[in-house]
Image (cartoon, rainbow, N blue to C red):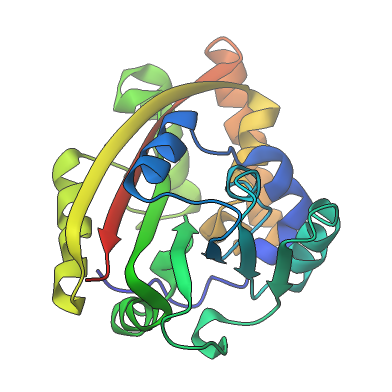
Length: 260
C-alpha cells in the first residue's frame, strides 16, 4: 500500500482541534492487543506517530516504558505536557525514519492512524529490526463513513465535495477484505502469526461539530482559506436543512503481527 505524500505536515497546524475532535479507540481493540502479547512494567514499547495521544493512555496504564515518536512540534509539546505524570513516558520529536534505536529492543511497537504516512518498505523493515524476537507490531486506524453512504443528506454532502474538492474520491466502507489485504503486507517483511479484526461504532455530530471534525483532515486543512470557509459554511447549512445532525459510522481495523 503506497505512502500518502505531502500532506503529513497539516495535522500539526491543528493540534488542539485534532485533540478535541478526533476519537480514541474502542476498549475491545486494546484487549485484543494485550491478549496477543503480554505488556507489563517490564515491557519496552514504542508508539509511532502519537499525534494528540488518542492511543497512548491504555498503553501507559500497563506500566510499560513507552517511547513515542512524533514529527509535529505542537503535538510533541502537547503530549509531553499531557503525560508528564508518567515517569515511564518519553517522546522524540522527529520523523520515524530518522529515529535512532538499538536493534531488537522493543517488545511492542504500535501505530494508530499514522503508519500510512511512512513508505512501506522503510516502515515495516525498520519495525521488524527494532522488535525483540517474539515481539509484536500493532497497526490500527479509524475509517469514518458519513451517513452510511446512503440518503439525501449523503447525496447533498457529495455535491459539495464535487463543488469544492473536485476529483475527491468518494469514501467507501472499509471491509474485512481490506483489513486482510493490509495485514498480509507484513508477510513480505518476515512477520508471522498475522491477526486482523474490525470494530464498529457510530458518532453523531451537530453541523458545527462536523465541520470542526472535517477541519482535522489533511486534505481539508490544505484547502485555500476562503474556499474552506465557504465549503464549511455550506456544509453546515446542508446539515441543518436535513435536521441538524450527521451520523458518522466508524470502522476501526487492527492488524497484529509477530517477529519470529
